[in-house]
Image 1 (cartoon, helix red, strand yellow):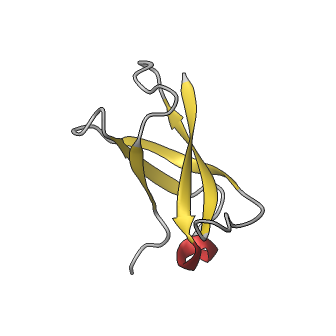
Image 2: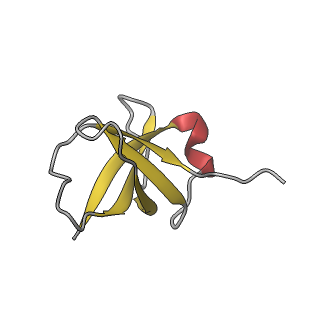
Length: 82
């Protein structure tokens, strides 16, 4: 009923990402659908090859539409303007 999605956050943005932040993920298989979740975990170090921080997002998957190794794009809410 839930999935964990691994996303890579650019090094320059990695200091703005924290556990519990809201996240949205869109998958190529479902171009008209957005999946809302939250940041569950951050890696302890950057991926040296990509200069990015691995981040895991927990998403509800009640209808079991999401499958392992699906490709998508995630966005993490890092701040709200006043």
